[in-house]
Amino acid sequence: MIVGSGLIARAFQGFADDQDTIIFASGVSNSGERDPIAFSRERELLHHFLEQTSGRLVYFGSCNVVNPDQNSPYFDHKRAMEQLVISSGKGLVLRLPQVVGHTRNPNTLTNYLRDCIVQSRPLTLWTHAQRNLIDIDDVASIATNLLSSADTPSLVSIASPWSLAMPHLVSLFEQVLGRKAIVELIECGEHMNIDSALAEAVARDIGLDFGPDYPLRVIQKYYGSPHEA
Image (cartoon, rainbow, N blue to C red; front, top):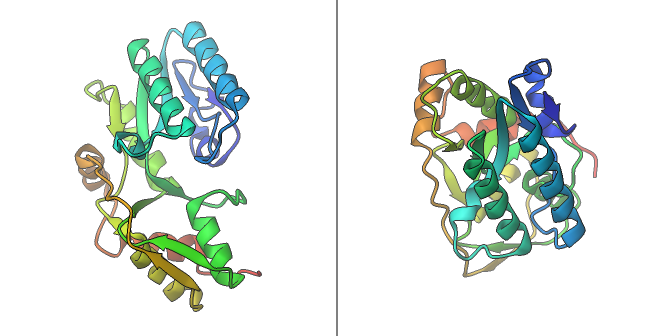
């Protein structure tokens, strides 16, 4: 069963008729969200499906929740929802970094970077801030493998081995788009600490290539064709 209709929900359509697994891909997706009503809506929906299911519910968390500096309403909410799912004994939390796929959502990091570069809008970059890109197709492949195993822990981070500084990430977009970004650099930001060992092991087992050029290949796949401003 699929709850939701966005990028992640579409990638897990293979579970649409699975009566033992709920893919909970509905809720707050904008990390800048501050409206309590939006958080309450997701919490109530999650409670409902946890109470209804006798099987397993898959919830998508954020790799950034381990960063103590991320104390916004969004990340506080994500931590609480992760704990709710894990404590229910019915859930699997899959923490994700910046997922890349075909979506018109302007709030995704990669769509925002693309739009700023193509439209010649200034970008303010924190020099030490890191972001980790992963292809939505690879998320689905790794997650499907994890769901087929009885040994999968209740909390797994699905990410690539490559957490890149924002200036480096923007340089890859410049390479793919053939356009220069207008950038202001600020000396601040934090590294991402992601334990992606299990996801990397699964990737090797199923033949996914997480080589050093992985971030560039992901950007090329989704942003390599011409885009209008």
